[in-house]
Length: 110
Length: 121
Image (cartoon, rainbow over all chains, first blue to last red; front, side):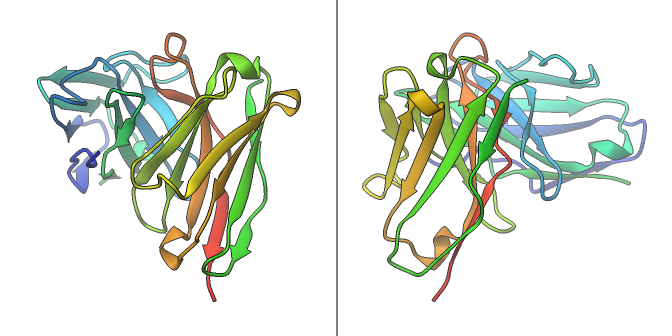
């Protein structure tokens, strides 16, 4: 169960869009429609932002969207705002009742 | 409202064990699974394992197999994570989070506040 691969950092100016990738294998990201994304501010618990690749929980702004192609999932944040600055983690179901997280991406709003 | 309240910070010596609790409220505990995730200082989230709060069935990450035990007390709507043979690398914040195959789509929708476990001689 190796960690999913995310870029360590990403950045964008207010109002711009930024996309964070999450690469796994056919045994996790590519094999299931169960990729989720979490936002974590310093010292806080993670917050669910996207589940089942593209779905947003109630209360999450529609500026956040998810997609997947093959073994790579992506989180796009449109219309960047200062409060979007945080760490973002992807997670995937990996079969046989196992789950795996990505390495995390620090999003900076310039 | 859904809440998970975790036990307080712990300081342990190497070789000892720690037991962290996660008390659920605001929903029917036994219809969900509880997962445990940890985060070492400045590091990524790491999935440790989970328990089906209804059946009591468990599954553990291979990394922690043999050292971690997850249990639950349905009468108290509380899940527990026991980690043994502690070493300095186990210093981390430990989180619980709930999950439901159909209602949350294999994702973790409500998390506890985290419990800091420090392992030091």
